[in-house]
Length: 193
Image (tube, rainbow, N blue to C red; front, side, top):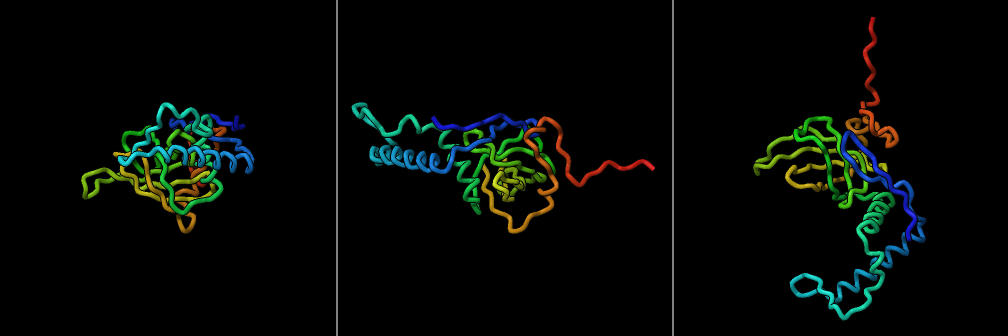
């Protein structure tokens, strides 16, 4: 069993699961190697139409107990933190039906593990007839990303920003206080004269 601490968080009404404690480097590298062996065993049964059909007489696929969605998502989040990719595809969640500037959501893996806070810009109709929205991602790896989200799909492609922008930097996020509304850091209430 792999020792991982996961907990539920809430960002402006959108739930995700954050990983607070990762296994050490040796355990993660071992898990990655075992899942690669498991994947190679499945690939040997790939048919010409692209499907994998494992016969019933095959008693053991190696490391089948480790090939779970949770472990694959753990590796994805671990690699996202460690490698700090220039481009990334992840899933976006928001609880708002109408998108407008400043709405926040979360970027997650397919299984719902937290990758960062997403800030949406205004939505617009493209020349293809779909609705799109500019989005910024403040990743858990410390990198800021930018992308254009087509609202008819759940995923978005992000590209690393060349310089930090104040559009994202002004928003604070503390998972411990995630039930409270978030305000920009530089907004102070007006003082009464």
